[in-house]
Length: 262
Image 1 (cartoon, rainbow, N blue to C red):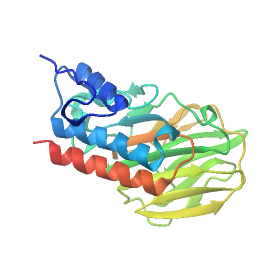
Image 2 (tube, rainbow, N blue to C red):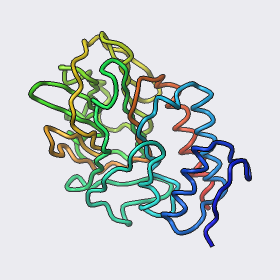
Image 3 (cartoon, rainbow, N blue to C red):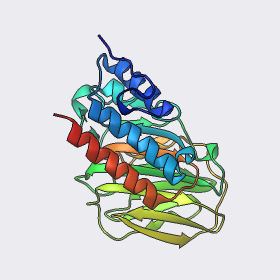
Image 4 (cartoon, helix red, strand yellow):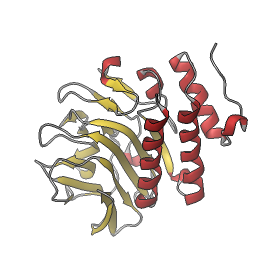
């Protein structure tokens, strides 16, 4: 029998978490461990307390669910389109693994769905790529130039959001795990974060492109580019937010899910 969570039952207090857990369980065909469900509820509670929940417009937790189908249930927004991932690519604790060839997610959300000067995107990675120039998340138009991407630029991280510049090189190689994200709060600069450190770059904004964000690569003029074999456990897209606060909430979420799985 599939358990259907009820608001306030066993500690699940947030309607969004209740609905999400029920949808994941329906996709999985069985219930989640209480600890996994509570970790999700705590994430929603925490994001609301931080004032960042409403800025998240599209998101998937690519961990915790018992099946790949459950992992692709959206926490917020539209479900992603799965391109070639199979059940063997998914691990409940460490997430979904790419193949450097054909496997990626189309998030079905693009930069133009959010305001030009009020936007963000992020990922949480648990396993690095074995090759350089393999990307994390992005939607990039070359003509007219409009870069919204977090990519590995031949071994160095490269961040850009609604900008004509390809991005800011982070300079740490392609070995990053954990949270990484970009947020544009205004027309003159964007913030970015990786390895628990926040930065800002002056970069005038341009009109966002209408290409869907891809995860495990970037959408380059409509085609996947730089497909990686990283493992991701989370992505989010939406309006501008505090990346440090989101980093803390996502990191706590992934840790709690891992602790709750036998």
